[in-house]
Image 1 (cartoon, protein in one colour):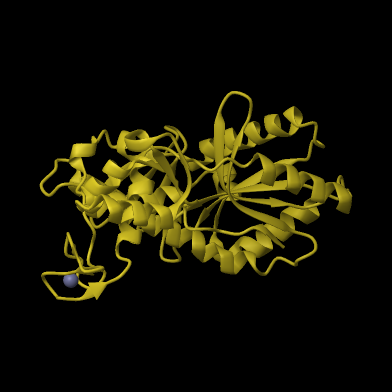
Image 2 (cartoon, rainbow, N blue to C red; image 1 turned 180 degrees about the vertical axis):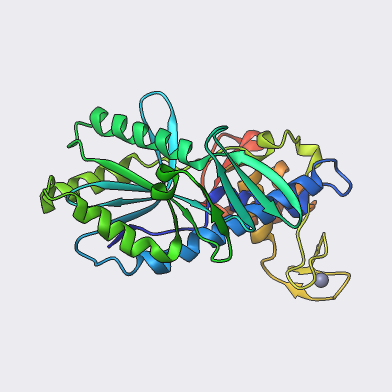
Length: 319
Ligand SMILES: [Zn+2]
């Protein structure tokens, strides 16, 4: 049963809003575009495992995607967590192409792709850390101490995995074996630890404790407001920026007109700068001069308003 479904991640929405709005020729532009492509591929990889997880029978396996919990000292993230009456199983999903060789001597994996070698930290170490943090989290929340297992799942079917180490071989799997590996793991434990009622209690507690990462993408890339392009994008040709004429946004490139192209721009604003906006900030970002138009737009999109006159701060609706 899927308790928490996979959603398009907030940080990817932020990156998608950021990428076309970084000033042309900015030193970080290529870097941000590459990050976006890489994270999108990763998301695609995580999505691909949903198909294989769907074979796990409904009443025995409780699946939660994308969790971020606090262990009392640090936050930790899990791509997926599977809960049964007998155990917890963490999945760390990797969407990497090429040949992946595990080097246990140096706790690294080496990716060989297009004639190049690149090293990354061994994901099994990360999995071990997640296991101990999840254990700590269970204790902190006075929940039953279930055995915690986990797999590093390579979700790209073309990836070739190489390892001589027995432990690595037991911890690393390809996504098409997910169902059999998880079922096998569940049956290695003979005793039920949780009742049906306790399963509900644990999943409810996990859902309540899940705190998605909501960081500033500008801070992450050390960008300032002046690095970001203002304006309303044309939905048809991508031109920036549209002009507001007689109640319509008009594109000078393709002549397409739109009544509500500002909504996408305000979504970008919210993802990049947060939920609060003043009338002047809105005018600057949409590149409009008319205060009454700004007020009309704010009245249609803001969920709440506080303060007086020029200092009035409006809160944009949920992301
Ligand atoms: Zn256009």
